Image (tube, rainbow, N blue to C red):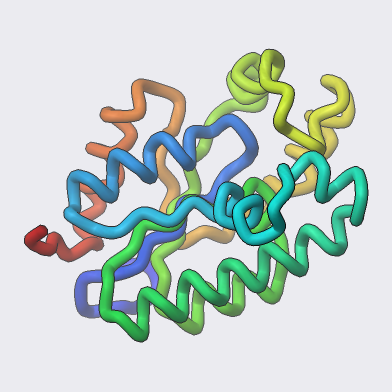
Length: 182
């Protein structure tokens, strides 16, 4: 098994570029497993009291990344301390941050990259107005290429270019998670 773990995992992080379906798939996966679901971006917004686009505009990306790291640390800590298996929808850039990757590994969080072709992601994001790093097609594709090597380091890779329920089935087929009763 990748990652060297002998026992079923109790933490999963969904990584991938904006538009790959981390939030939707994460919610469905958590429901199927009977696990808690944590979505980093809404948690950051709730804690900050403003939208992520406003965080980027007012405080800049470094401040956002710091908030993201603190939120991830809090979610991982709660999951471990409370013994609550958790599916975490990571932000699009979370897995490209070395400190975040270190935290995920230290918590024995299995990271699954939801892989989608850039063209599909672009089409999905073109109509969204809540993506602070989506300015135009050229910058979108440049950011995708920049983050791709980080996503490729994820422990698992699942094709995310289909119906979210099918993606959940592909993740479950990996056999890396422990079901819990609700």
